[in-house]
Length: 285
Length: 301
Image 1 (cartoon, one colour):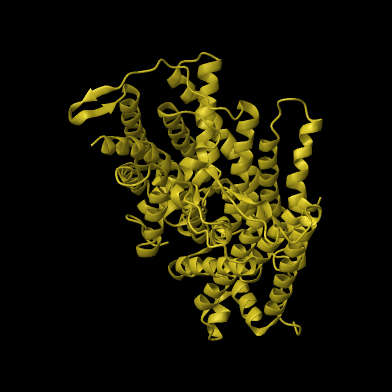
Image 2 (cartoon, rainbow over the protein chains, first blue to last red):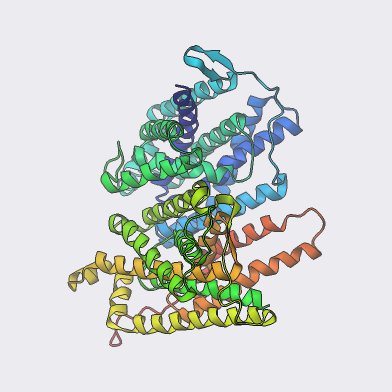
């Protein structure tokens, strides 16, 4: 039972992270490994504002997100925009993304050091609920905030003009261009939403556990599994996918070694690709 | 220096393997580290003395162990390949990363078999026959010999009709299909052959380093080999061997940076950054894609 609660918590973190990733994967048409950098910087920027500048925790997160967005857009201008106009395929972009992840991770190590860090928060005792479940206040907040953020993102995508443009572009790039949608603007907004998504996910993970430079990479692989499971480009799929992956990973610890958790995500991802490559909610590839 | 060259030779073997897969056939394999690990551990199991701490201990002779390691890597490739070979490149990349990580996680977790994170010792073959001062040179010789054999064999394979089919598949799969070639079967063959070479490289590595841990088989190893192949010129065997030497040189050379940089600057992080930068540059700077082999449509055109 405790494992299921852990699974929901992990699922919430993965889901909020996966929404941004699924949009990036679909609209920019490649698997962006550099997203791990956005995850980890979301955590570390917040750390700097909170631990070192004394800014309240939530405000620290809110301040970090535009920084992340600017960084992502800047990187896009420097690299991917160029590759897009050259017609580079998804593989080439992916390799650049891997390179960027290494650069960002090493940047984190150089700036903040390799040691484990934590947010300067008092240690909270877990509450004990029925069924012998232990959960902390922060964990409940993470689950709630994650769901709330996803709802906000849903509203954005459904109600705003740019949100609709993004969904149209995610659905069919060529058709969107023909209809006169400014795809470069859509891309900028995609990176911005990704910043919200990744920044929050990174922060939540750091809040629940700790900060280490490699946390982005470690979270990234289950995120890709969630994205693929839910159907690339489908934010609601990302939500479901995230929950499934989170639950599967945590519950698996009940009957196999905990170190195999990432393997569970990989296996689910591979099975998805073999059985229904478009994912649970995806349309064509 | 001998240590460095032997290390480079191991990676050159890996680079040739990846070159067949990516350089010649356009097959994206990000699971190099996984096969590398399989080869190393299998050879270690085969040649070690019996021990309660890990599997194997069959004390088999070195050449036999190499062969077994190579074959078992091939079997892994076959099992992995049959379902995934038809995936598009970037999906194949993610799945193969997943495979390599699963292999590594199994090695880490199943301590009774592999001694997990504590690592396994690997024997020095023919240690008693060679005077200890010369052993380094002796093993370098063995490594270079194996590298040479692989190099020549692959050069021949690539020049053959089989090799031409591979290049056709790389350039445009549909042409190969139109010509009646069973593309997926060729891709599978390439996956298996390349992965067997990775396994062989792994075995050579194990007996060279004499100690293997799961940390020797992190995704970074795969990325290193990819940089070697892409920077050395995919599709060019000599190029990738040179690439292996060069990248290995950069990797080891950066350790000397710690002498000249101010205190507290982490060289490990800088190494990561340099490899990352190389990956980015190699894609961005090569004019059309990343093939180091001239595209030959026809001599008539």
